[in-house]
Image (cartoon, rainbow, N blue to C red; front, side):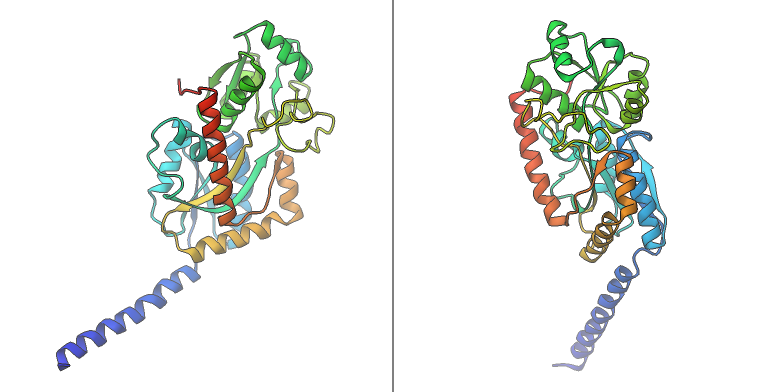
Length: 324
């Protein structure tokens, strides 16, 4: 081997030897600056209520600010796309419900591929809530609401956090399972929907941000869309107990990172989230907003997403759901 070739190869080897420790050091020191958390819905709604306790806890755990950035619009696609196209350096994450990931792709062309452009990081929580109705309507139980809806087709208006959101699909599932005709009214977020529900401009919702108003006697909670009853409303039956089986349509929230984010950062974040999930303080904070947090690793979230996508795709097909 010629001396010049040898020196060239030796130099390249030295450079590659320097590069690997540098990358590892960057990952090992993560995070060493503020981390952005994009929430793809407007402030004040369920997504915001779930994300903010997590941002607080992660800030405390890592010693760097985890800053919420609300980017609502297009059923959550705007914020989700922003994360999918962000630099995969561990300083931008998505905290989202399932709508932009396992519902919208079956209804329209999304500007991202939820299964390949985003990496699951950690489970944030599942909402434990159900259908509520304004007292002025009259029905006080789930059965009475169904009877009223059948006798008055198209008269009840139901507000959701937006088209193709989990709350939208809960109404579609109810309509499919019971044959009721209830009008869907989409908003940019559940906070806007609540503002119309309280004065009776719309009559129904299914979100966690309505529950304080149930406790205050301003709204009536008719059921729980979850496998078990809510500890805060132990007398309110689940849909399954009411005879409407297979209709819970889960509202779940997870954290995601852009494709290419180093596995060491994903694993570090997930491990910390599992620690936080197990603490009594976080369990209490989640219960205060009526959320249950099943601990999950990234691979478990990916499998759960796959199943949820298939379930929603089937519902969209059989119920002929359209984005209108």
